[in-house]
Image (cartoon, rainbow, N blue to C red; front, side):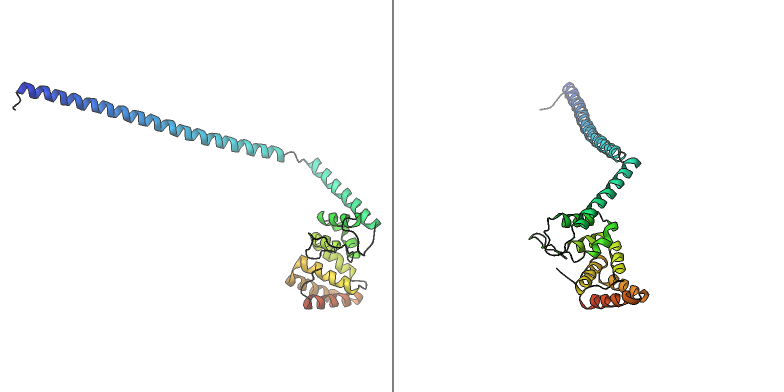
Length: 227
């Protein structure tokens, strides 16, 4: 079948119209897709914005809480700490007993709390009562369990070791010396503990030198004490 010129022109017009329609529809689809993309992006940024705002509010709240601790409040807390330590020390000094004391007795509980407070004010007293023994409970099987003053001195740290060296100016029992070694080892470790003892030995005189020498030998030969 052969098309006339008129028919060809008519067919061309139809093809042109179809192409135009397709172009319009394509542009419309692109517009819809673009609009959907914009809505998605806007939603994401909105969520991120809300998250940032939430985090900012949390930080502001934290900063607000931090500013609650004023100089006056800090001074009041320090005074409260000193008062508590004085009361605990008074309780411990009033009820001095060293053999098979109940772990829940006021004496032992006050000693434990002095350790928790890191009360260097109590170090000398704790060293003087270092042989205080309270049978360990089943859930208290740790280093130096049964010896609350040892545990407290370890928590106090260096002030406790200083109090031990001051105590060595007078005669000490073998049990005391073992417990002194335990405190020094648990606070300092092996190397630093031995170095500290050797330095103390160089400066020690009289009774103190004799005790530091004995303590140093015990430290070298008996590597750990578990009570």
